[in-house]
Length: 527
Ligand code: BG6
Image (cartoon, rainbow, N blue to C red):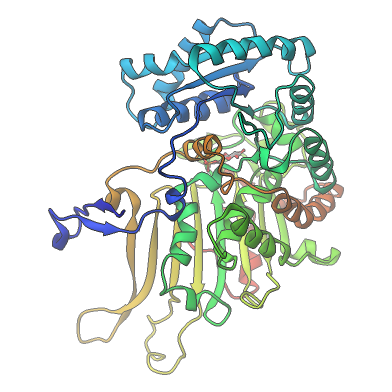
């Protein structure tokens, strides 16, 4: 069935409805009703729970996408009554939910919330959890189905999965009566070796199909739309290769700093936080081959093939093609921002990167010879995540005398904010002067579809309840990404920061990031 939409901006369509192709992913299992279940959130006192997970569940309920028989249990170390937990979560929903909150809905939702206090490594806690959850099963008809969301420090992933298994909270994958699944937040491992070890630990307790490695970028509408844009249309595919594309740029820019996450950042850094996962996922969707179907594994197979085709740097190339930076004091959004080294819980001589820019090559037929430039950073001038595919200039025959004819065509995917897609091409300026000027055709989600895009976590939690792991990273995706990233991090670890690696907060990173492209007669797209 086709969706209907009105585009108030397009006069010919006013008052009419238009048939739109449906989101290909959404068709999968759409008719199915979400199965009853209990979602247990480990780390229920954390920021992610209050800012993202609970508001996402609330919005799912409002959109009719939560199972009728559903309970969410917050599992955390602090002592707290269910009532206190509900009150806190109500406040969080009011503050962070994307949709308006109504008292009646809030009450309906918070009735589904419970709290369980225990340390993550306390056997007795896991023992007591059994009757606690069974009791909820009886009251709410949740059938023994369980989803465990590990929103905790990565060092607890193995401990919690061991305890869950030891105390019979994990069922056999082939159990026909009930299911148990574990959602793990990123980063999956600290480097290649630790990711391999973590996988070994996890698979002692769970099968791969029970592990949902979340990368919330995969839940973003605009990231899912990359595949629809590429493979749900026929006009672009012929251009999507080294014959026509000059270069691809991906930027994940944030104006915020590390906020209150100094301790996490000191152990992670920008590469582990953003590039190894979010950025590599976006890159693989922009450049992978078409999958044979929309099956989770067909899509993941293609992503893995792409990730394994990224050329690893030789030792002497790391310095040339992989640059890092760290923010100094500066101005962002009209306010002074302190240096990374002055942030709370950060070593005043820290060697942790808050910015990285790289030039990648993909060694396959489609992309051979096309440079891929990626960059990500904290305390940049604005929040902007974009993919820009720039095409080769047309042959310099007809309009070469026209000084203004200097702009290559581009496809721009705005992942956030102002989610949408733009196409830039050259047009004649009206008049007798024969001037040519680049112009932009723009598609914006919000104005076309008349509503904002749902939060990534909504889609992902819903998919996990439905048992669809397409939008979660398979282990080999993560390992291939580490294979590329780990040697760079090892190299950086050996060397203290040099003066030119620092950048003022509120700028687009160190000057070397500009030079990386300038040396190849290119520049970063202005954002
Ligand atoms: C998280 C990172 O995964 O993604 C944060 O840990 C980052 O450092 C965040 O700020 C960005 O997410 P979004 O959805 O705001 O782009």
